[in-house]
Image (cartoon, rainbow, N blue to C red):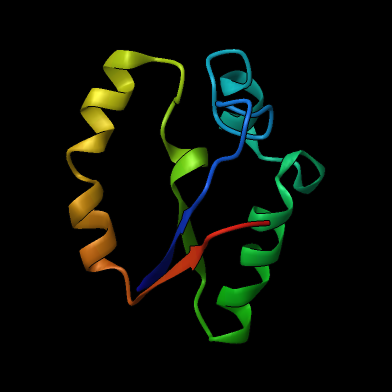
Length: 93
């Protein structure tokens, strides 16, 4: 079981704290909390409060400036959101 976060990515798009080709090597190993947006940092605390281990954050799981990755990963997003125990939505940060 996991939670998912749907959120506004902000402008400019993609923002530095999102997964882009340039940040992929660093993010692949571990995402430093300091590199996350405030929305992602806030959402990162929620799973522990609700006894979940994982949260799926689209802007950290899809390479946003890679059209082929976006096309590949956008299709299963419906499955990700429908499989999540709960989906958190952040309209603004």
